[in-house]
Length: 430
Image (cartoon, rainbow, N blue to C red; front, side, top):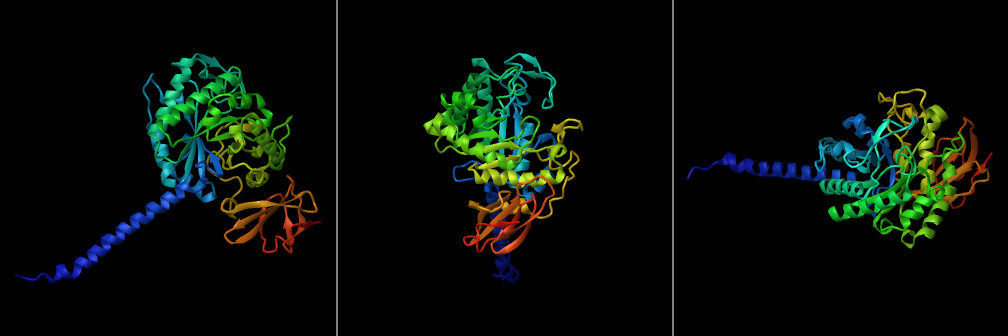
């Protein structure tokens, strides 16, 4: 027999190379799995900070920038009418492609299931409104047949994307005529939410479902939440979603003003249903247009909105939105984006604040002598960190003594090592 020394010499190296490649592939898979679960609580719902996107604006590079910014999930809409273009036939091409991009980016999704469908309801002409994108729309599903058809669409989506890291949200702002035209009907919406949640759970038992995504907090929309609490949706939903826009009489109160309303909303929900005693609250939309508050303040409000919600028991916050998605400069709705429509940051994010904030665990609020000084204690690994800022929308600064150090504060949060947080929790501002 003729020996083959070359074979015997190199075979172990080839096996080692194959094994190394296999281990590398396994490592990359684990990294992707960990990334896709970043920002997901033990209850299975998103946590931390997400951002609203318009599918038609977003490419792979955008999603990479979104993840690097510190967001852990994206919220986007799935239009019933755009997918069920013929009765009973669904076109998933666009959503298939977008889910693939999101999955590869390491992000998860909150997906809004919404819009009417003219096969099941009549056409409506909407009045002119800054929030309206299309004047001619199909009416929302209010008849039993239309609700059943919408539920079938939702169930089909949940079954198709059962393996994705996704939370489903039933409708968007059903308490506004713009999104439930011509006039909101709490009874109809509550019935739709109950039917849709049940259909989704039957099609995909592990699916997570949110509602009602009201335009305001529960304390400002008690009728709709009261109606929803009386339906099977109260026990079916995994969490309650709401929007936290601070718009009042033309004013836009600062983010911290939400905290009292969050606490009041929690108390209301507990009174409305025993099943809502511990239900997670998620803010799935909130933002400030740069045209109203200025670009620098908009950036500060992003961090402060997240912090205000964290400090008052809200599990997740979605900033509206990533890019400006309208082209009318006179319309405030054209200026909510952190970026322009061309993808240029209005204020360059160069300090990694958001990324760091969302990686820390909130502990409690600390008291300051100056009521304008806001102090929150966080844990970061085995260390304590204090997040501090001024409750202001101006360029004012102040010096505060925090954890034994003199710190210059502005309306933009800073992180101060809090090794002496227990001794110096009463920050002294001047």
